[in-house]
Amino acid sequence: MNDRYEEELVRTLSGAADAAPEPPGDLLGAIGARRARRTRRRVQSVLAVAAVVAVVGGGTAVARGVFSHRGGEGPILADATATAVMTTPAPSPQRPTQAGKAPRIRPAAEVWPAAVSTIPAKAPDGWRYRPITALSATELLLAAESSFERSGRLEVYDTARGSRTVLAEMPAPEGVKGYFAQSVDVGAEYVAWYGTTPDGGDRWADFWVVPRTGGTARQVGVVTGEQAEVEALGTTADSVVWSVSGGGVYRMPLGGGTPERIEGTDGLHLLSWPWATDVGERDWEKPQTRLVDLETMQTTEVSVPEGMKAFGCGLEWCFGAGESEENRIVAGRTDGSQRRTVPGLHAMGRDFVLARDFGMFSVSGVVGRDERGEEIEDHSVPVAAVYDPVTGTLAGVGRSDGRGGGSYGRGTSSSPSSIVYWDEDLRNVERCRMVEAEKIPRPSGFPSPTGKTRHCETIPEGGGKELTVVNLLAVPRTE
Image (cartoon, rainbow, N blue to C red; front, side, top):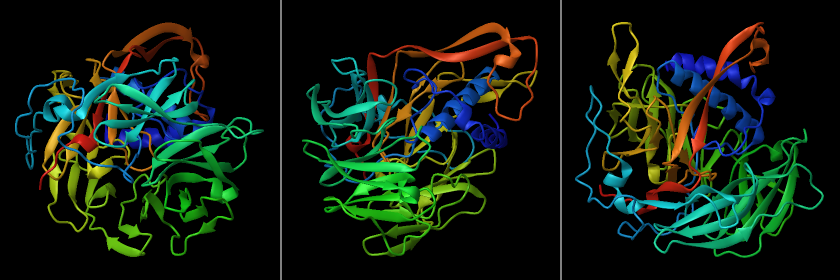
């Protein structure tokens, strides 16, 4: 799908977000990973439909995923044992060429066998698992959901032992209707999350914490108005911290009390405590220019290459997407050193930074055009790839449906996540039928046609038994 078309499509369909229906069931097959807020979930539901349209048209499309976890990562054990999907020893990592044809992207299970494992897709009571992030090289933090995005508890799954442990229940506050637990984040001592009432029409949010070792969750406090427009959160030793969609970072003592805006954080958005940036979730095409340590207020200026329409950083490495059709992904350190292009990768949105400064991008399978000008695709190409800028390694992830589409997800933690996952048995199947044209959902302002028309939908089928997970905390890295 052409980038400019994608941008126009996003702008058009975003206006219809509130009218989009809540998607049924688990949409891993259509949506890479969820956004925390209900309004953002509706936007992604519409974007998933847009991706389906692109697939039907012959282009490779994957709905973009979510920005996930970096803080409080726990030990990184490169040689830890995991239940590997494939046990073939990984050859020396391939390095991307500087220009021209994209390198062959091998599956993550070949590249990082100790980092890839399978886990149950459901808890013993039937609740579906939603991966959040990794706690160590063998421990995964999961949300157990009783229904779509209704998180009821947090569990830790040990891939080495094949065992699960309940970390904490995620209760709803008494007397609050329409409550949804939202993004979770892992700190050095606590696991925190916030909840909202997205269908209530008010601006309201509360914060919860539980010790990282597990126990009974405790509500820290409630906020309203601008302070409730939470986009990211984290914890310190004595406070819960969060940034709001309009910019600015707040803190509230873990024992409760009056929240305060941290001085000097105007226009800043939390990346992972104590780090903040000058771009937020609404900044679709604004390059990141600063990285700020909120403990010291020391600012790192980011060197942004010319021609970047999106550019974002972790703590040391940055990734960007330019305007040209080829070699669009640029990687380099925050100071501009070690900058290189990575052929064959494409950004969908701006959420491409994972934990440990790995990057994640969609992959085009287009290998040429036929005599009619239609794109020819190689369906053996992976849906997406994780890129390690330290070693130059590319690892393919996701489940391709063999028809130009596919699925994958990334962990839903507030900070950049250390988990990428997918369902190997999930299939995207096209179903067509004749319907009244006026009944087909469309963005507001678009004319409603009359008569019958052939309406096709691509829906997920199968799966639901196991998830394949890539744990980035188990990936060895050497300079």
